[in-house]
Amino acid sequence: MPTVLIADDDPDHRELMALALHRFGHEVLVAEDAEAALCAATYGGIDAALLDVRMPGISGIELCGLLRSDPATADLPIMVVSADVGGNRIMAAMEAGADDYLIKPYHRAELGARVEALLLRRGRAGFKPSTVATAALLAARAGLKPAGAALPAPLRRTA
Image 1 (cartoon, rainbow, N blue to C red):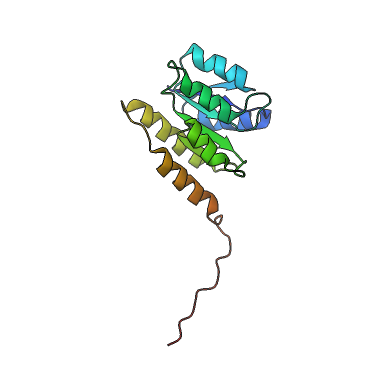
Image 2: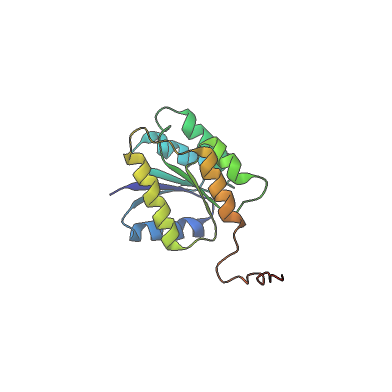
């Protein structure tokens, strides 16, 4: 059973993510700040990490960079999970080494699918996602209208 580390300073977010991941069959470790998450990750036994951007002290993006710079955690699959998409946060996370960026709010099924994709990446030796391609995909997703949003009227052609 894969073990997923959740680092988020909001206890409600930690609980909701942990509950969802338990239902998907994962063991979950939770950390309320980046320092606790860094300690847990370096101790070992973690198969993937979900990091919130805004945490007291070290941000999730900075934590991602620290994890990537340590040989013991350099290959750990990392997904940043945040409502913060402004100020080029997605690009900053990808440049720090994140494998994925999930925007809050999200559907539980999407969380499960993204975590499964992270875990598959870990199983493929030598697999490194293209940071630029992944960042472009995430930026495009962020720009899409939410489901159910009104679409603009189609253009009419006149000859």
